[in-house]
Structures are given as structure tokens and as C-alpha cells.
Amino acid sequence: MSAEKIIGDWKKQRFKPIYWLEGEEEYYIDRLMRYAEHEILTEAEAGFNLTVFYGRDADWAAVINACRRYPMFAERQVVLLKEAQQMRDIDKLEAYVDKPLSSTIFVVSYKEKKLDGRSRLSKLLKEKDKAEVFTTKKLYENQLPEWTRELVTSKGYTISQKALLLLVDHIGNDLSRIDNEIDKLLVNLGKRDNITEDDIERYVGISKEYNVFELQDAFSRKDMTKAIRIIQYFEGNPKAGPIQLILPSLYNFFSKAYMIFGQGGQDEKSIAAGIGVNPYFVKDYIATARNYGYEGVENALLLLHEYNLRSIGINSVATEDASLLKEMAVKMIAV
Image 1: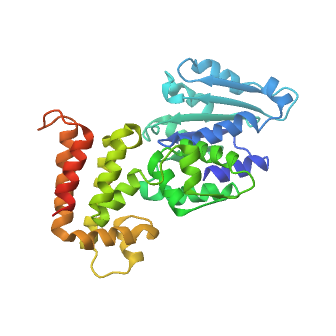
Image 2 (image 1 turned 30 degrees about the vertical axis):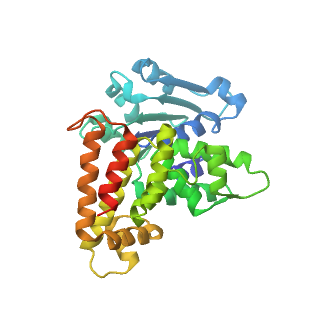
Image 3 (image 1 turned 45 degrees about the vertical axis):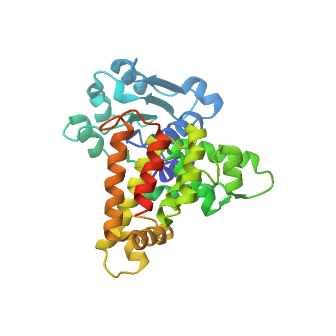
């Protein structure tokens, strides 16, 4: 069941006694916990019927006692256990999970991992029709652009492709931050309903000309002039393009281009699926494979690995990041 489906059920006043929210992706867990805390009960009901525990300080007996209370002046009560992964003796909750109270909505956030499926608590949660186990996992990088576009659309706006790439490339796999940045952008749009690259530059603080995505494009096209110009910008603005961000990004890009050679004469849609990228971007990888050839892409990957090691001081004397990038660019593009 998705987070949207759970919230949809809650809006229709359809509740299960227990919701166990677990996994690596905090965004959906936090979203559900916020809704449970602020929307299930009215403000008047919450005064008597909302109880919040935090795992690090929670005593299992106190949690169970709270869950077993009956609501006051309302049909139901809500008990929240946040950061449950930090709770000692969490297995003691088995007694309540085995026989939950129908008038209590017990919502647990168990972040960063999942319960051991062999434990009795896990088995009870999955066996009971009264419990909903919601498991999250991190999105793959190639899923981020589409996820972000759908998020923008759900808010009633659109975003240009360039703006989308700038935002996702700058933030990475942090859904909560992407959501926050989009909300900040929307406040500044006024009557407009489309986010542009100019908006990203103005309100998020990412240069639309000097960023990791544009550097990747320069390497892809073997445009030495553009690559050196962007590296020089990064030299003067270190936070705009730290080498620890640039090298992994380029390595991931060239790794995908390397996979092109194993795809055969397939169409673009099939190639995109085969190398795990959005079909919209597959032309960039195909062009890179064509510009470099098999040996050129292989050489690029070897250079990226070498300079990644040198950037952390392995097999290298102390060298400025910009100097390393310029040296790498010459070796990679000029061949």
C-alpha cells in the first residue's frame, strides 16, 4: 500500500489499529507521521486523545498502557511512536500487537531499516489483518527526475526539463529537500505556473551555466573550452561544484555510456531500459558512446577512478581540486 493510499483511507475515516512505517526512505514515513499527528483528530480531540512517544526515551510499558486507554470525548485516540528504531526492548510491544484496541490508532515510525522478518513482532504485524506494514526504500537515481516532475505536477505546476535536471542534479536523492525547495520556488513564482532554469538559479542558488550537469555535457561533447570554463568557475566558487560531487557524477554518467556497447542495435526506448535511465536522457548517453568509442569510454572510466583516488590523496601529492579536474579533462577529451 502506498503512502497516498493510506492517507486516502484516513481521509475517508478508514483506519486500522496499527500502522508500522519502516525502511530507508524517510520522506514517506515523515509525511504519514505528520498527517497522523495533525489531521486524523480535530484540534479539540487531540488535546485529550493524542499521545506522542520518542523511541530513545520511550518505555515499552508506558507505550502499551497509552495504547490500551480508551478515547475521551471522541471515537478514537492516536498514539505515535517516533524513531522507534532507537527504542530499547521494542519486542515487548508484541503483547499489544497481538491484541490491539480498535479505538486506538497506533502509528510507529521505524526508520533506516526494517524489522528482522524472523522476529515474533514482525510475524505478528504481518499476520494480523489489523496491522498495516508500510515499507519504503530509496529511489534509484534515474527515478528522481520523473518523481520530481510528478511532485511538481501534483502541486498544480510544471517545470522545464533544464530546470528539472538542475534541481535533481544539485540536490541528489533527498526527497524531503527536493520537496522543500519546490515549495520555496512556488512561493516566488507569483502568478506563473511553470518553473524555469532562471527560477532555479535565482531561488535555489544554482548557476544554470556553471553546474555539474553542464560540465557533464561538456565532457560528453568533448568541448574542452566549455569544460575548462566551468572548472574555472568551480575554482572560484568551491561550493558550486565540489570535486567529491563531480567525479562520482561523471563516473556514473560514463558507466551508463559504457553499457551502451552491450545493448546491440536496439531502439532508444529499449536501450534506456537496458542501461536504467529515463528515455528522455538516453540520447546523451548514446552521443557520448559515439563521440568516445569503446576505448575512449573505457579510458574515461579509468581516468575518473584514478583522479578520484588522487582527490583524496592516494598516489598524489597535494594538488588543488581545480588543477586535478583540468588535468583530467585534457587527458580525457584531447585523446
